[in-house]
Length: 428
Image 1 (cartoon, rainbow, N blue to C red):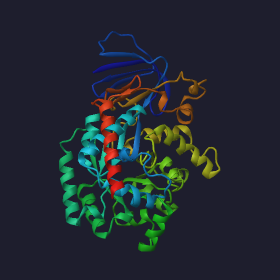
Image 2 (image 1 turned 90 degrees about the horizontal axis):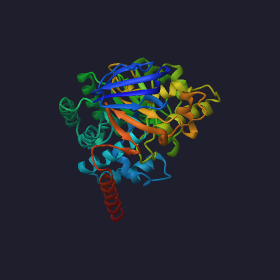
Image 3 (image 1 turned 120 degrees about the horizontal axis):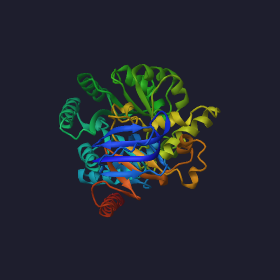
Image 4 (image 1 turned 90 degrees about the vertical axis):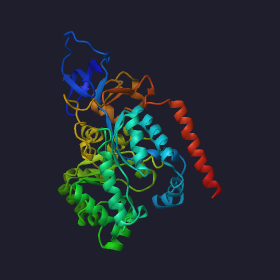
């Protein structure tokens, strides 16, 4: 499809200007600071009415099928939340459940201007198919842990996954991940390390989410979690560490050296009372920063506007420095996919993937428009999303998300899944 978006304000990831954007197929064909009038056939011409086109949000850490646990397990610290509520409920999920729950999450992503996710969940192939069928770009990871089996089984599983995703739609790719240091013994970590070296792939992992996790790792190994994992060479090809609430200065230096992104999930970390990640200090030390939502079980919204706002203001408060984290830096961190190994999606430029969002600048909360980038970070919300484009396809418009299936039937099916699992848990 060939589309022309004109009469727009455009933030291309670096600068703001008036102009137009053109899409051919799944790529951006042109971004121009002025609207030109030469005749050309378009499948759609969209007058943006002076509203803002910007890169779509890239959700750096999520567990899409956890939509079924939204508002299910509340007011608990992480370890109890996981062991007493989440893990037992997740054990009852099927591949089919995860497929439909992921598509429900995709509708929420599109409605909030998100078109890329870094996913970590079991039932991985069902989740990946749902992402691909819905049109969400993704790096899909499995979150390997000891329960997955012997080291040989884990190595074979990774080999099989690498081969499987070679024939998958290009917008969805595979990444190697572990759940966390505290769920992986020496044999599991050894198997993952051999796979990382074999394929020269980055690693994704939960790291230092709670003080309890850090204390336990130090007691068992004499090292902090990232220090321990990096010391085993697991991040030799880069990757991303999720949460990083309690990382040390020494760990930050290693992260910067190895090109490992720190992905903050502020809503989840606040809600589970885990703490506030030291993003400002990491930024000073050259660590790449990403932003994610975590799953709807701990958040409870897959809302990148909220995460971006919190990523900025929490640093100001925790450091006592109102200039600790500027709006443009934070918005860049929220809209870049390259931190997760997905190239060609960061900025709005010719040849880049056509993934962007149209934001209503005429709404009362966006007036009087003194600084548009600041307004997006500090004032905007999901209700300001007018349109979302993913891979050259309009996937959200007029208040409705298009994930390739009937939304009402999908929501009803997901409610039935949640009820079935809640009933089974009640009988257990």
